Each structure stands twice: as C-alpha cells, then as structure tokens.
Length: 409
Image (cartoon, rainbow, N blue to C red):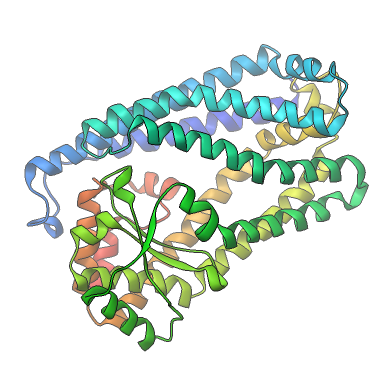
C-alpha cells in the first residue's frame, strides 16, 4: 500500500473510532434522573423509553457503520474497483458513458447494501418505539422517486463534470465549480414547489387564530410572507418539526401537521419566529455561500489530484480515468470532510442561538419558545443530556437544555 492508500485507510478508521467513542460516551453518560427543566413535561416511563430509543438507535448505527466499513475494505483490497472498471471498459462506450456506468453501478450497489438497514430502522426500531407511520407502498414509492430524481438531476451534473475534467484541461475546475453552483441554486429554488411535493402533501395553513397571529407577526418584523405551509409529516412519522426552505418567490416556512397538533398558538408562533430569524439574520444565505466556496476549493484540489498515478495505484487500477479519479478523490478528501463537518456544525449551532435570540426579542415571550422546544424534544425522544464530544462531532443544533437556558436568560 502506498502513502495515499495509507492516508485513506487511517482516515476511515479514525472517523469510525472517534464517532464510535462519542457514541459510547453518549450512552454511558445517560442518567435516570429527569432534568429539572423537563419536570412536568416528561413522565418517568416516557423518559426511560426515550433512553431505550437512544440506546437502540446508537447500537444499530454502530452495526451499520461497522458493516459498511467491512464491505468497503473487502471490496477495495479484493480489487473490486479495477474489476468493475475493466468490465465497463470492455463495452467501448467512451470515457463519459463508461464513467456514468462505473459510478452508477457503485451507487446502486451501495443503495442495495443500505436497503436492509433502512428497512430495519423504519419497520422495526421506529415501529417499536411508536414513531413509524410509513407503509410498504409509501416506502417503495419513495425509493422509486429518489431513483427518478437521481437520474433527472444527478445525471446531467455528473455528465458535465466528467466532460469538463476530460476535455477542458486547466479550466475544468472553475467551469465545474460554476456548473455545480448553478445546480445548487437551481435545486434550492425549485425544491419547495417541484421536488418536496413529490414526497409530501403541502397545504396552505387554514384561516384562523394561528394564521392570523403568524401573518400579523410577519408584518411586524417586515418579513415578506404570503402563506405558511403545512406538511403531512404524520404520513411517515409521529415526530414533529418546522423548517425554512427555498429563496426568492419560492421561499416557504413549513410546519409539520404533528407540530400543530402538539403545540399552542403562542408556542407555534415562537417556532415560526425562530425560522424567520434564520432568514432575517441571513443564515441561509451565509450557509449557501460557505457551501459554494467549499465546492470551489474541492474542485480545485480535485484538479490537482485526479490524475495522480499514486491515487490509482492505491486502488490497484491499471488504467487512469477521470471517473475513477473522481471516486477515489472522495475517499482521499475524507479527512478534510471530517473537519469541515465539525466547522459547519459549529457555525450552525451559533446560528441557532441567534435565531432563538431573534424569536425571543421579537415575540417577547421566551417561555413559549422554551415550552415548544421541550414538547418537540419529548415527542421526538431527543437526548436531553448528550456527551460534549458527541455534540461537537454531530450536533447542528445546540443541546436542548443549553438552548432553553439561553432562551430564558
């Protein structure tokens, strides 16, 4: 094994070990005593069940990640990459079509390997703890729709990247960056009206006390809002949430139907104020800009590494190609991805605090937001006392108790 192969091996094992350690510490720190802030919200039986849910999910995730790492190393050192490459090269379709078949076959194999775990998670774990509302028809239709979207959206983008790195020379990286940026913005723009409705039903929030309160609040903070959408989240799960999506004329604030059932008007208004806070504080624009900048860096580094012979030697490849180099670079870039994910989470947690502050200042009702977050945490079986290392590695939102303390201050 050469240096690049060693770097990839160490990076994969390091990621697995660190996240495994965080999972272990996260489970070990669990205590039977209910935090005082949740007294009157949780009962002892439900709190114990939430901890059982965390243990079950953590154990399952460890088994899943262990299996995938084992398969990856067996495939790698069993020379699976050159085998598939030789097979599709024998078709003589040219570098672009061959690359699409090569990458597509790897993605399809990965999806099939993940399928049993996805089925177990949905129909065993989530079902056992009372969350799952997904039936087999919905599950299968979701798979078909995801496959359709991958073909319609992913195929043109991947084809353009392969074409540019195959024929555009030194200009390839910035042309690919521009293409990926347009793709990202286009998907964000069409997602609320074209993509998301493929999976869920969205209706305009009906007239009444809640809608009047939201529209009045939006007007008071000069937030351009035509309607609030309600999503049938209960179609798949009893978990609840709210989110902001899209931009321009296609921006939407969405409430899960489960969230509306579980909260009062004041609590729902506080949640909406938090989501509007992200918009007013330009958090969506900020994260989009960071993602675009990061993709530019990635494409530039890719242009340097994609033809490196050591990269192909590490995977036992006899022939160098753009499409294989693209896949291998993803593995090589994994150490940077590890630290970039941590950085994104740090920024995201900071933004959540700022959105909470915005909601509290503009609604002048910190208790409503705190109570809404307590209900969401309880109904989703959120971990109330996560280990700091687990938070550092995985949390895009601050731990719920820290958010509540910050809100009530």
